[in-house]
Amino acid sequence: MSFQRLVQAAVAALAIAASWPASAQQVLKVGSTPTGIPFTFLDTKTNSIQGIMVDLITEIGKDAGFAVQIEPMQFSTLIPSLTANKIDIISAAMFVTPARKEVIDFSEPFYTYGEGLLVPKSDTKGYVKLDELKGEVVGAQVGTAFVDALKKTGLFSEVKAYDTIADILRDVNSGRLKAGFGDYPIFAYYLKQGGFAEARIVESYRPTIMGSVGIGVRKSDGELLAKINTSLAKLKANGTVGKILEKYGLKAQGA
Image (tube, helix red, strand yellow):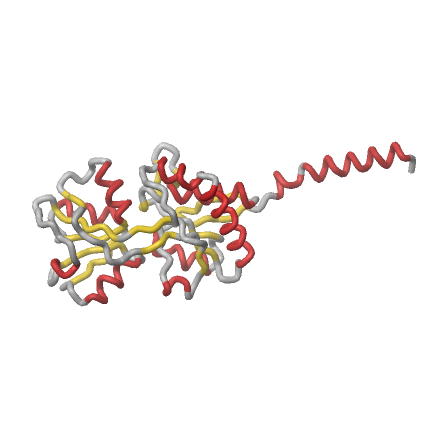
């Protein structure tokens, strides 16, 4: 083969190879929820899941070299879906807890916060501690770290488990529930939208169930976890994470 033909063959091979990444890029299924505003929520205009955790995993994917396909599901089904290989990643408002770490692995923490206390507006007491609600019926979202933690205190006559944060807001707003506990940023976002005029967050309350949000993967996916952590560190350093948080009304954190 002549030198010219060798060059032509090499150029053709390079052209074919250059077309591979776009078509062969790995697409990972990401479990997320429609009820975790502002971390995740259903955008009714596009009928798709949007929010902080969607933006974050999308940016991580761009940096790490994979595309994401968001799979909407209830919060309580996220971990079972991951371990059953129905999804590849969890990117939602999920706390990193010892119990969960026994089942799946998490990325480095992304955002840290505690529980918010929600009561009817007619209740004007400036609650500070949990024991001020001793003997009352309270509520929290099923599958969250709050349900078990509240039950273990032994303070309450009942801890009702609700499917969604919106259900808790609705019952507190109507006066059917004495107090609700849930992710403070989610409560704050809902109330900001003006849909629950008869409920309020108790600003004097000091959270006791602090937690950090992380991205979840299967324990067998150590290589993927390493990629996520590398990209997350880079996005924190270059300000991308801060911009995502600010977009949804939250402040960047040092952690």
